[in-house]
Length: 111
Image 1 (cartoon, rainbow, N blue to C red):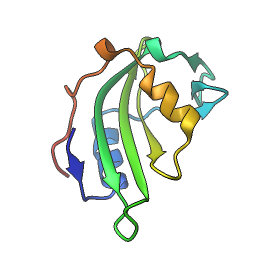
Image 2 (cartoon, rainbow, N blue to C red):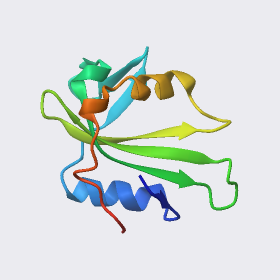
Image 3 (cartoon, rainbow, N blue to C red):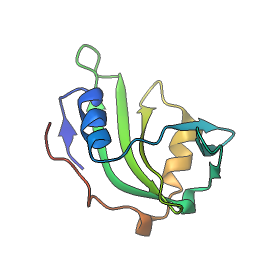
Image 4 (tube, rainbow, N blue to C red):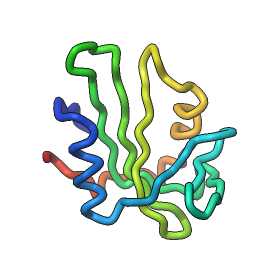
């Protein structure tokens, strides 16, 4: 995983162009598909790329963009804050995704 200075939205748009259009919501320790309302457990998710970002004006404004595929074939992205302003529940959830479900096979190197 590499550090990128570009803004998250540039990457989100590129992944949307590749078909990663599902919207997810994190609530009650589950990632929820906003249309079907299905609540995913970590083992039902595959991280196919991820990017770390630092804020341009504030280095403590950090986030990770996860590019996801689900066991039922939904594809989307989810942006998680990390560092001092992190959502610890969301960070724990993503850390619980099995290592064998993580790859960089869809990683976009630059926008």
